[in-house]
Length: 455
Image 1 (cartoon, rainbow, N blue to C red):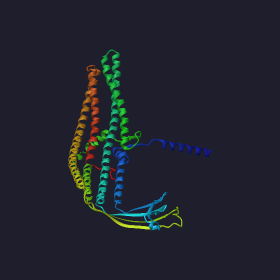
Image 2 (cartoon, rainbow, N blue to C red):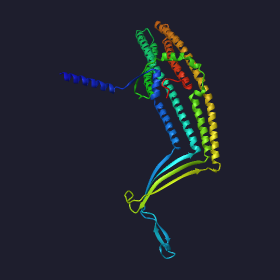
Image 3 (cartoon, rainbow, N blue to C red):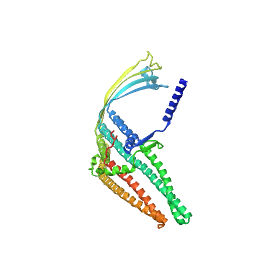
Image 4 (spheres, rainbow, N blue to C red):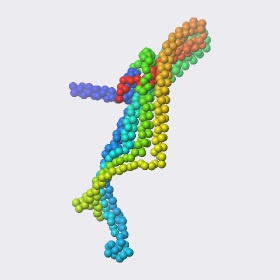
């Protein structure tokens, strides 16, 4: 009996464990936790890290061009019909003026060799090493820009989910109040104490709220899926947000010191990438110039060869003959009909273009920051104004509600007041989201560091 009870208990435990394993994993995030998670797991940052890894491999690939290169080669030949060479007949004891066919090549031959090549000097190789380093810096900067983009996308997606959740809560409350008004007004109409138009006006409001609720539910699902995409999760993953939209907006609005930070243009990612482009163009010009320099390389090889009428190369009867060569190769460019000069001038113009783009980037960064700060200030001011407007709209709606119930106000006036209230509610929610997004824009431009940002 004890054995049976123990077996039953074990079976229950295993079954519970299996059910837990099969249940989809759920996540809970604050905004900062969502950002940190996306920095590690989003599709964009994963590929950005791979791009850096590719740049590292490319740097070593370029470096290896100047290191010793060893290659082995083997060759086997079978002459189905051996070529014959005519020799004067008198050399073989024949009549003068006649020719005797002689076979010089063996029917079968095999050789194996090892060759060492070493670059001694090549101006292009030196420039290529510098270019590989610059490309690695560019890849690092691109990874940083990707992380900044991901952070901004997470902030936007996170805020949209909170916005839809709050919208649903407000619409539910409005829908409940509208349903109550419609019910009471319909009863009053049935008792002959209200106009049919009053019922119809309130019914329009109720139906519009129902439509808004359906749309808000759809938008909630879409916004959650969008957030999961940014986080690098399957879109059907269950994610719980631990932040409140209003608290988040208030917290971001209070961080006014970001408005007074001095802009260090050289620290912005857009400047670094523009500077990378200038360096790249400079190296391209140096590369074209280096092609006018001589190049020098050395080589050495060693091998053995064997031949015969039969395939006996791996038997003790086979004779193998050694050979070896050591040498240097010098290539000196002399005349290219102006081709190298044209390429150098073309590279110089490209470098000048990159310098102009860098200057443009500096001014564009300053302009973007000024616009972002202006948007942030407007969002904070609009948030304060939206809260005041909502208080006024609520008072106006309550007054019209009382007037309508007392019979001194019309249903049309009540509906107008309700529409004004709904609009004020939506404007307040949008103003909260605008604060969060505009703050994220500033952080992206000035490269504000954040948790888990280090590589």
